[in-house]
Each structure stands twice: as structure tokens, then as C-alpha cells.
Image 1: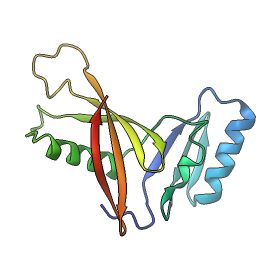
Image 2: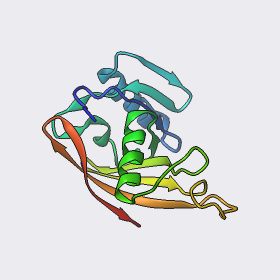
Image 3: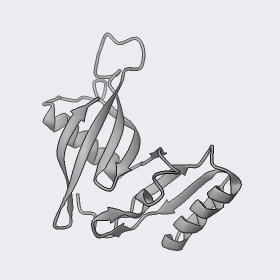
Image 4: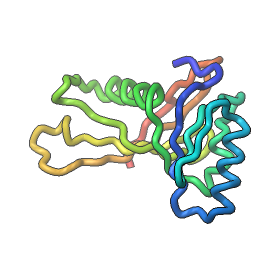
Length: 147
């Protein structure tokens, strides 16, 4: 997965922050974003890659959880299924739900296994800790741990 100028759309869930902090968050992201809009407490923007860090980690003490649609989710899903040798079909697959960035090279993902586990009557969520490394301009998963 090439991340030269990362073009993922990131939805930041800013509930629980006071109005002043929300505005600081929105100002911060709008500075880096060409397409930006505000809807209540949710900011939607294009994120950009800066060498050796992700700019949304600068605020990770205030914002712990956000949803990442698109390439990063697909990449994590591919890597996880490959590491675990899971064969997936449309009816039989895992889904990456939420992603929590812990620092600039670690993220926690909640993985829904209920479609994969045929007898599961409820949603089965297992947390995975991914350690990420940059190899040139490519993002690689160095290790995966279930927690």
C-alpha cells in the first residue's frame, strides 16, 4: 500500500470534547485539508502523510477513536487474513470496525468475527494490536497481537 501523500478520508468522532477543544481540533485539521466540512461534532477531511508520523496522532490524547473508511481498513483486513490463513467468502469474512491509534506506529483495531464464525449468534469483536513500520514509502505491518 503506497502512502505517498495519504489520501484517506478520516472521520473524527469528537463527541465528549468541549467546544473550545472541538474548535482547536477542527482548526488543526482544516489547516492540513483542502476538502473540509464540519457537521456537528464530526470533522471530515483528507489527511496527509508527513515522514515518520501521521498528523492525526498529534492530538491522540484528546481523540482516541475514529473510523477510517477505505484503503487502510482493506489493507489491515488483507494482512490479517493472510497472517491467519483465513479463506474468506462473501458470507464468511472478518470486518475491521474501529481503529484506535496509540502512537505513530501502533494501532488497535476492533475486528468483527461474527460472519466468519458460523455458529456465532452475537457480534464477536476481538481487538488486534498492529505495529506498523515504514519501508521506503510503503506501510508494512511488523506484528499483530490479539488482546
